[in-house]
Length: 384
Image: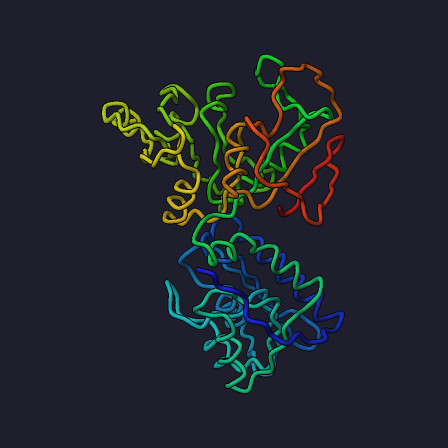
């Protein structure tokens, strides 16, 4: 697709402006996992130094943040004429599953809109700002750190809009000497409780978790999201569980298959055309997709295209070193989350996070790595 964010002059924002955009960002995060493949957006309406209304994009296909903020103001009996709206992403200018937001904001009487960042979607990309300005609304676009934060929460959406394929984060936990399992390949408990909780929160944010048949056979994972903070009214979002299984070796008794009999969220990507075996998985509630083969294995680029067609825009790759290397070799990893635990395994035969038969064709460097402590563990994350 190749869409790029239109260059817009940035405005000098006050300390208060930045703080209100920060409030809108916190609201936007409430949509994690529920709005894919739409962007995360939050909005607040401010009058005389006080937030009088709030809104965020809560679920795909439902009202966007700006309309929710205007509805919140109306429900409170607040007349928004002359007030300022702070919104993390440029208001949309096109009819989708919901009406466009920019005309609604322009008609509301809001006199100033502070935008965290512009929208690279070709259907928007500056058009929302044009609608507002044509209606006499003052528009200020953020720059600097606050814009970086507004961009970051939607990095998967921006990538998907530009490419039509998922944004992939490679996640793994390893010992201090770079091992992810025991010498015989059996699983080890490496990460602490806080690190594992962060992984559950990540799963609740993404559209899909991808793993390989090797991980299924050795670990029998569930790949479910069990975040610490959730409510009965809004339970944790559960991602689609994708198994890359070229020859259909996934046990019908595995956790991923048994869970799919209840929720239908397991997808098996295979190169096998064995209709009888495929039928067994489908009777168990799984979706089976036969993919093109590359060197005897599921083609990773074809897998990315298939997930993109299914609008699975944000993927967490939780797998062993062989499939991780295949994704990296195909240039299909965009971010890395590496949990390093202060333990030593030492076995020469113990697997590592990336296990390619030959040296990878490119040198992968993590840009602007961020380091976070989770009790004794250290998380190193950044874009490739």
